[in-house]
Every structure is written in C-alpha cells, then in structure tokens.
Length: 125
Image (cartoon, rainbow, N blue to C red; front, side):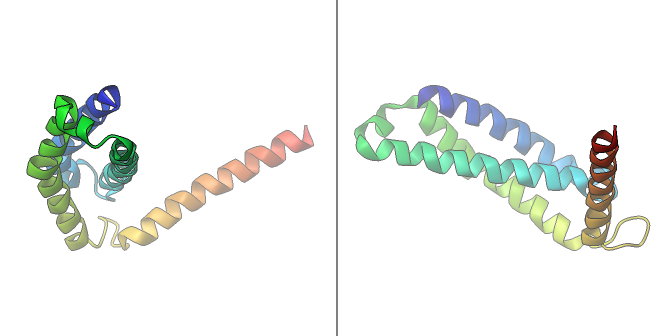
C-alpha cells in the first residue's frame, strides 16, 4: 500500500504539473485528453487503494505516504484538473475550425482504418 501510494503520488505530480500548460501544447486538445485519461486511471487505482484499507482502517492513519498523496490530491491536483476541464470545455474548436470531438473521431478513424488495412495485408500474405 505504501509503494502504490508513492507511485500514485509521483503520477499525480506529473499530471498536475503538466495540466496548466496542456491547453497550449496542441491545438486539437489531444494532450489534454491524454492527461484526463491518465487522471481517470489514477482515480480508479486510488479508489482500489482506499478500498484496500477497509480491512484495517487504522493502517491508513499510520501511512505517511498515503496521507501525503491524499493531501496533495485535495490541495493541488484537483484544482488543476478542474481548471484543465474548464479550459477544455471553453475550447470547442481546433485551428482547422472543426469541433474537438469531430477531430478526435477523425483521428481515431484514421488509426482504425490503418489497423484494418494492415490486418488485411497480413491476412492476404
């Protein structure tokens, strides 16, 4: 539990440090989307970590790493991710004039088409 807390703390620091600059990194919000996906993953692991303390709640009070992680998430991580979500919701179009959702679908469509093409090429070989 202490090891997982330390790893989550490091991941939270990387995400929260990158979050204020994410909207300026690219025009189609893919970096912001990646940060939000990483945040979702971090929260799912954090929930499992907290549930692991259910069998022995007293160990939560004695774990310095978990206390630091929870303090950091509430004081720094959550406000920065909230600001990123707000900035992303205001940025609705890319520089091409398309909506962000459309550009995401289009880029995923290109990747899917390439994968299907490569799979067919392997099947025919």
